[in-house]
Amino acid sequence: MAGNFRDLNIWKKGHELLMEIYNLTDKYPKEEKFGLIDQTRRSANGVIAGIAEAFGRYYFADKARTLYVARGECSETQSHLSVAFGLKYIDNKKFEELDTEYQGLSKGINSYIQFLMRHKQKLN
Image (cartoon, rainbow, N blue to C red):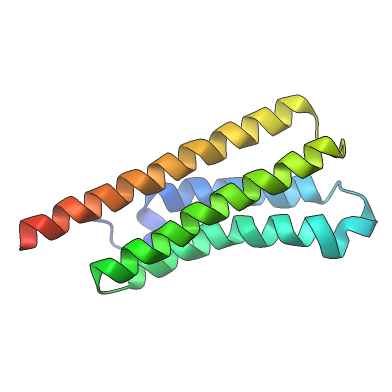
């Protein structure tokens, strides 16, 4: 098991993607500062915050519930990226790359939930 949340591959990947989101949204039009920029950054940050929070939870049900929220934040981030692509703030290549990365991160979160389920069953 990981020593802290920063040791989790899903947190590392989410953090890497968050840094990319910050760099990408810096290039959006300034009128999006309190709109799409803020929303995209918040949802991307919500992914890693949720993973970290789940790591710190004691009960399995709390861990799983928090990870489900983090997975939802991945989908929300993908939606914001779709809007940015539609508004031509990002090109197709970058959109496809990030969309694929967030799909993979969602799968990673699912795998972590399954790992926790198996671990819980072993303890019972």
